[in-house]
Image (cartoon, rainbow, N blue to C red; front, side, top):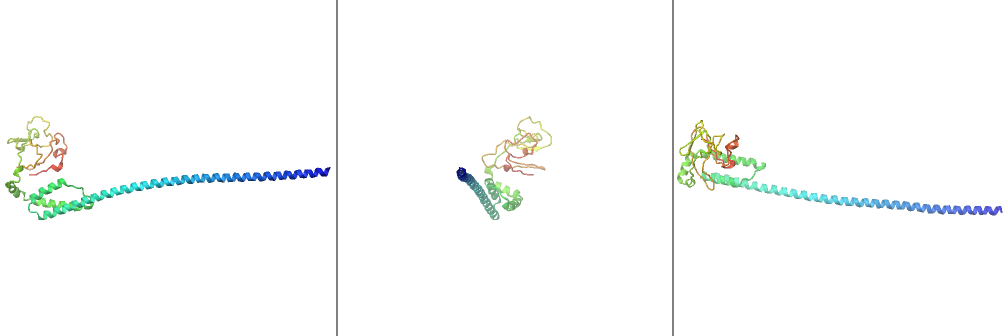
Length: 269
């Protein structure tokens, strides 16, 4: 009886061991599956990260291409602007060269001055530093020529006036007493002005010069060529062409000149 119980206990023990081994095997399999699932999950996370990285790279590449294209367009526009400016400067240099050639060959100095003045009003490109020295040299030579011509003006003007070329543009002028400064006195039908240093009792007028000793003409020089003669004497005077809106009341030196200085032509006697 004791021997049978012993066999039975051994048999149960062996059965328990088998069950334990079976459970251990199942548990190992479950743990292995868990590891595989974890590995798979990590792989998915890595793949998502790689996908996001690829999208980021693609977006950066697209933005980079866009910026490169914009920069190329800006540089192209800048280059086109430089080329256009260079072409203008080349044309100006050619014009100056032709002008100097004409200057060396011309015999009618007054006609040359008239043509040159007209060209300067219609074509005035802005020089760059690359040819500024040359343009200054050209202007210096032209100024030297103008100085040499002006020495002969007293002899040339009577001859030109007698030919009748300028007589067609003759414009008789009278002075406007309402603009005359009080130290100026008008006479001879308002065709003569003198500065005597004493104030004249002119009535107040909004057009009268109050600071600078100036007077304007009544006639408007507009719409055509105008020629007039001025006989002057004394130490100093200035003659100019100005807009009617020239300032009259302030102390600024802006009131001494035309509002468009390119129209101003002053003489000294």
